[in-house]
Length: 288
Length: 288
View 1 (cartoon, rainbow over the protein chains, first blue to last red):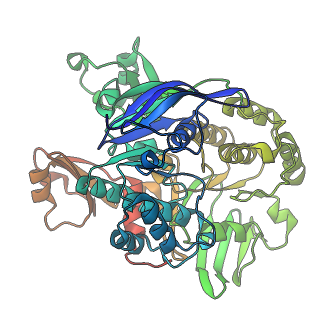
View 2 (view 1 turned 90 degrees about the vertical axis):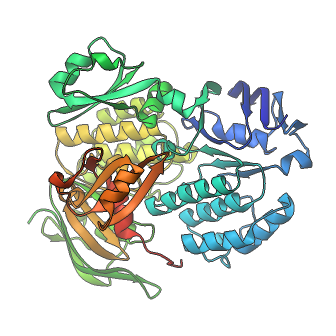
View 3 (view 1 turned 135 degrees about the vertical axis):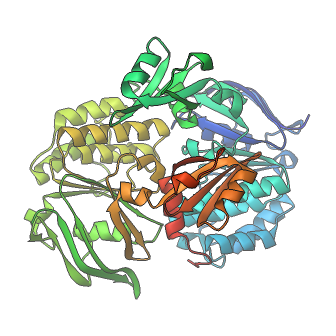
């Protein structure tokens, strides 16, 4: 069966359960959002898929083959991680070549175009790059390597808004030109809401949501209007948050709105994915 | 005169002009957004105000006193920077005490409450903290120190969406309770759009905008509707970007809309601050 299959995987560090009995399938040709708070277990899961870590329990399969210590399976998955896995003295263009050799395919020409777009000089050594450009050379590598599964852990860390927008645009273009699976793990949730098709939410090492972005967004809604009108409308409803600006109020609610019930002066709109995520994952008083 | 006054300040590094003849006043009791791309000169400006760097040309005054090598002036400004200025082996609670001693005022009780809210154990040493919590102890210090000018350079780096929302909420509450000046330098522009009153945009070491958030946002607008309708409406107008989803299209325009001209089926709304920023600061083919 094609896809990445995670079956009953658990992993602990120093007695703390980072992942607790995770079962999940990542299909082919889809853009996933892997969402969770800091420490929820997202990076651990990505590292388990790509053999940077090994599970205490459970198994992972890539296109039907065991992922653990299996070069053929691993050659199908590229992880862009927070750490640099290349030597600091390596030049960016050599990272591209080396990646192509390991994975059996890399679009050097496209990588060159992307370097131009981002303003990255590919003759530079990794150690010469700023935080933003360290993310950028990794993003370009991830977009140009020829594998069916690309995992991106915090891809936009340190990028300014212009470079983030460029990255999202190139990702969509690459995906449209040659469908493959992208898994995006990021804290900038609202920015990727329009990109992702399927959402996996991890909380305290467990999966609490695995559904389409569309269906998750349909589980809540937003109303806005004059504060008094909004207050009357939301009374008794499942309100997860409000914002007030002057005399105007916006309220975020769980459930499905009954359109016939919405009075004049109240504007109904879809809920913001980030607001919904915050509500699903908030915990009071957790010590870390 | 009260405020931070920057007069004709320039600064070069290795022959490259990082700041070029900057003149700017940061008033009392205001929330500023200091916006710019990576490398535009934002951190250099904040470091010049707080004596981490000294200008090649020009002068800076804090409440009328020269900023350079002047402890009395410096005791009025707190900079939360990307670097850790405290020893790695220092505990968080000792950072709070030490900051209070240097600046002549610190609300230890409130800092304790904020640690609870963020889930930060203040007996921990800085070296034990993750990237997110390194931002958090600095945020808390910046919100609780008793100075009239608080400068925050990338305050939310590494924070998850829940902690970012909490930070924005506490910032607004602290500002309402005790007005002082906050200067926020961040790449997450859309998230702070509702917080900031005044916007300063730096591009290539020069200030290109210094105006109220309201007036900057009034310089553009957004239209949305069926792709065909939108295309007809925007023809000949100053379009800075478009997004298409299925048959629907959103277009971002500069200028002021003529409401009478907007046809049925076209929805008019305010422009997104981040979109506007991207357009103001984009540059094609810049090599770095």
